[in-house]
Image (cartoon, rainbow over all chains, first blue to last red; front, side):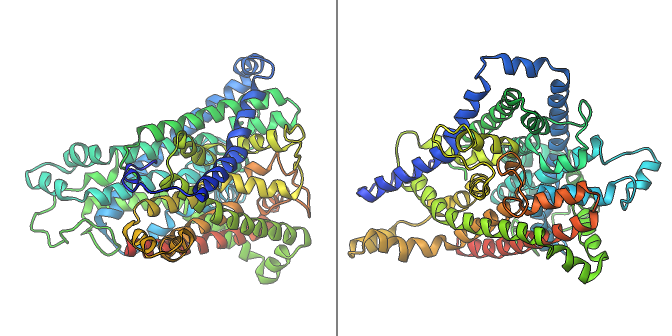
Length: 277
Length: 288
């Protein structure tokens, strides 16, 4: 975020500063801005035809729907889990807290393919650790909805926590204690004091989690089985269309997904208070 | 809502520490309800993350040390691991330089359109990786308006890693740089130190832990990348095939043991990175 505090320290810019600015702008233009613009242009190479084709193809609509549902489930799970575990880690002490803290970041640096493999090893119906038992009670995880949700929830797990923990630490617990001492229940304290105070942290976390969930590809590819009209998500559809030489369809779907990603980032940048970050 | 909030009222005379917990070992002792919440959270975390990741390592160990070693030293697999780690190291090096430069420009420079740069930095993080591959392909693929076609070559792997790891160094260095006290720099400058000397002797030592943490995250992200390569690198064995792709082909051939062995390498790298970042962040907190 362009920090306001910077304006205080006005200083003379040398030619070096302009050169550096130029290098940075050129780098970002070539790496991000221009390629992103080209995807938009390719998506509309045939006017609105490709986009219309996607939005009227039942299989494509199913894929987009599935992606939306999976993302919603993943965001809900990660928000409840994330806010809960953040409160526990910040406000309470228990053995193993340091280790847990470090492990909570692990999903961000595990390869999506490894995530998929890990879930397959435990939940596949044939040789998995828990899979056969779960299937005997009628719950199929791998190649089915629950597996896709778990893969997505796994990769997006740390995002809410990372946003909420620093805010919780910053606000301290004096107001919570005051509310408690005045007789508020734990629920009242949470909803009236804690939640309003961490509201922005939660919102950023949810928004980032949503973007990550809508876009998950590798882990979902491993666990979903990629069945057309059943377990094929939007990102899997992009790959499938591109490899089958439906370039227009691939670019149109990619454009939709990119549009959401950009909207997410722009909204986070705009709503984030100036003093944050 | 959160299970942790059902904690019963705590007696005010609780012997717990008065200050908000920010360190491990600080905080209130668990109540019955918060203990239950912790139990439920740990159950979910175990079912989703810990047990599956353990299963990867256990499966890899089932073939014994010689089986494990045989799998990861298989010529094609070893080539994939070398390419992945080598490219990720190279990309991390670029990110250390460019990420610090970008953070510097965002914090210390002011110009119209700076917010657009802020947005551009975060886009690789939010963009689905398969779309990222397509995005790069449109400028650096067969129909490149620049006439640069890297599709199905090693530079494609480098480019994809560079794109997806862009935010890490920038976003770890930026806040540290923003909070840096300018007085020491001004003092040094007034005593005749050149801009470069000020940067090297005053700024750089303060932001080094942040750069290192960002570098570690960027390395981990690069090593584990998959989605952006699918359409861009062609996944040619011995040439552009990365470790993740190697694991996926083992899975698709129903060779879960082999997949687990290679995956263990990536997991160990992730764990090392997590520990490194944890240590560096503690150092950052202590300095701040």
